[in-house]
Structure formats: C-alpha cells, structure tokens
Image (cartoon, rainbow, N blue to C red):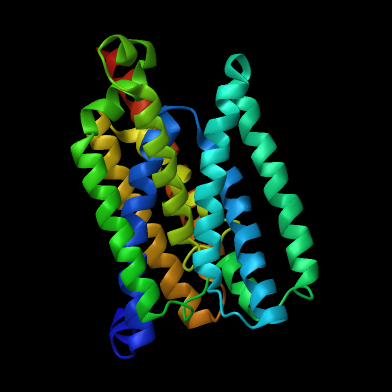
Length: 284
C-alpha cells in the first residue's frame, strides 16, 4: 500500500512531509508537555487558522496571491510573540496569556472566514489535513523548518532541559531563560504552521501531546521519552496518511484516533506490568 505514495509526485511529497511532521511535532511536544504548556499549541493553532483565513480572504477579494500556509505561519509567529509580551504584562498570572491569544485567534478566524465567503474546499483541507494538498514548495519549506528545529534542539538541549525541569535553577545558572523561552515558543509556532497540511490546524496540538502522553507511560528517562514520542508520532502519521488515502478521508482525524489508540495501549501495558509485578511480588 505504501508503494502508491511513491508513484505520484504529490503523494511522495505528502509521505516525506508526514515523516518530517512525525519527528518534529512530538519532539518539540516533549518539552511542551514537560513544561506544562500544552495549551500553547491550541492557542497558536487557532491563531494560525486566523492567518489561513486571512490569506484566503485577501486572495479572494484582492487576488494578491498570498499563500494561506505562509500567512498562517506569519500569524502563528506573531501570536507567539504576543503570548510572550502578555506573559511579561501579567507576570504573576502568566497563564492568562494563552486564553487571551486563543480567544483572539478564534475571533479573527470567524471574521476572516465570513469575509472569505465561508467554508470551501481549501479551508476544509487546512482544518483537517489532506493527503493531496502538499506541494513541492510546501515540502521544501517544511524540510527547512525541520532542520532548524532539530538543530536548535541539539544546540540548546541542555538549556532546554534545565529550563523545562527547574526554571529558577536555570536563571541562577546564568541561562538566559527569557531568550530561550522566546526561541522555544517561536519554534512551536513554526511546527504548528508546518503541520497543518497533514494533520489540520484544529488537530495539530494532538500530535504534539498525545504521543508524548503515551511515551510518558513507558519511558524510563527523558531521552527515551523523546524517542518513544517520535516513534509513536510517526506510527500515527503513517496510519493516518494510509487510511486517509485509501478511504478518501482527511488524515487528521485518523492520525488523532491512532494517537489515542497508542495512548490507550501504553496505559494498558503499564497497568498490566504493574499488576503482574504486584502478583509476582506477592507470591514470593
């Protein structure tokens, strides 16, 4: 079945893009979950939707030719910057920044979607993902983003680890916490924008958190959790793409359901191991 993805260029680009998304989304999601910032992905995904709707509106009304993927990426990066600004304003209640930006993203989305004459096929593909929507240019853009994200994580791995588990210690140690966090949230915005072609803007946060949630149940260390997260993310994306292609349905939904199935299996395996260990211990 996978051989069909190498027969046509557009399917090949989709397949390669899926492989990249399956790596970078759970990889960065590991740090997001550990830092208890999972809702940031939801907030930025809604801001990205506003950018996509804006691109469709401008293209329809003024025929300027703005690519919705690029406008969505721009809005996502701006949204991440505004989150950081609001976190500084509400220093004692930094979590307020996330629902403020999420609400703004939803409001702008509704307005721009209405101005663009409502839902259409293009918007539907951006919302829930598409097997055939990835172009060659999209693939190269996502490849560049993936290289940047992996490089930054490798270079700043120690700083990100320290900041994730003990921010106060990171500051005392001389780590520029604000700069690292700002870079981190920009990368999150880029991952969300890059993933929307495959997973869909409304479901992308699931790919950044569900594989990590499953990995947390099985991993014995942070690096192992990162590895399991990527493996589970890749499995979910491949299942979603294959079923999406052969059943002509948006892959985003099946990617999320596959991620939930993996999570349930991981939870079940952990409980089974626990009970088995308890029985073995009690029988001695």
